[in-house]
Amino acid sequence: MNVDLVGKVVLVAGGTGGLGRSVSLAFLVEGAKVVATYRRTEEFDSLKIAAGSKSEGLVGKQVDITDELAVSSLVADVLKSDGRIDAVVNTVGGYAGGLKLWETESKVFGRMLDLNVRSGFALARAAMPAMLGQGSGVFINVAAKAAFDHAAGAGAYAASKAAAVAMMDCLAADALGTGVRVNSILPGIIDTEANRRAMPGAAFDKWPKPDEIAKVILFLASDASRVIHGASVPVYGSN
Ligand SMILES: NC(=O)c1ccc[n+]([C@@H]2O[C@H](COP(=O)([O-])OP(=O)(O)OC[C@H]3O[C@@H](n4cnc5c(N)ncnc54)[C@H](OP(=O)(O)O)[C@@H]3O)[C@@H](O)[C@H]2O)c1
Image 1 (cartoon, rainbow, N blue to C red):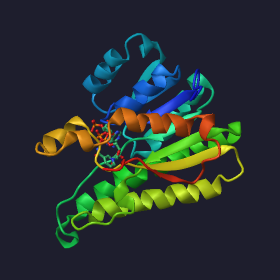
Image 2: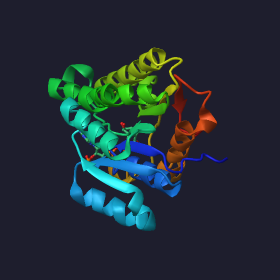
Image 3: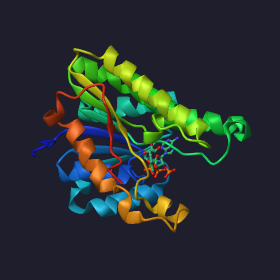
Image 4: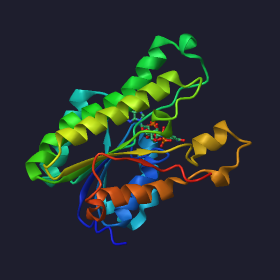
């Protein structure tokens, strides 16, 4: 399938992370211009090296995506340099689990809300007006299977991901008929280095790879998926 993303301006929040790095690279390979946010400079340097000859289409911005003012200034910078934003992919997020809800510290609960909900809120607030003005654009938020699969020991995480899905569903309803599409994706465990370190005895081959999920994100960002709006797309395979 031809996703035709040549020349598209794509903002990948968390673009150096376990999933975000694959997403950034996949858009670059398709000829998009990628603005990837990062926190640690060495992570961005590593992404740039991995991009090789495609790195001329890559710009890095060191931004705290939970900081609304910083995100607003990030979006203003992109609009100033590129004049438009065709897609926003929010891969910023975090996990906390293993404790019963009554054992979970309030600050952990707050961190889950910041990383998994406020990040999408800040990005939507900053980028949606520009995309609505263009009459086109795509907003893709990475939630999690846990948004619907509510297990013991994951109250703060699951609540934050469920809230993220609800927020995107409402955003999709807000944007109905505008030409801007909004969707969530729902990973389960992804085959990242961090997960391999955390679960050394697990069957890694059963976990979806970041590159496989990146392909779904490319599809959702492309016109090939123009009939998909307000969806939560499972990307946890059949294992
Ligand atoms: N990995 C999984 O198994 C899994 C499963 C289900 C859902 N998900 C979701 O998928 C998404 C990507 O997960 P991942 O495994 O790729 O996570 P990750 O490796 O931790 O990547 C997240 C990225 O966001 C960055 N980040 C974190 N806090 C930030 C902040 N306040 N401002 C800006 N950037 C920030 C991280 O930077 P640093 O590297 O500097 O921290 C990192 O680049 C998340 O939403 C996650 O919840 C992941």
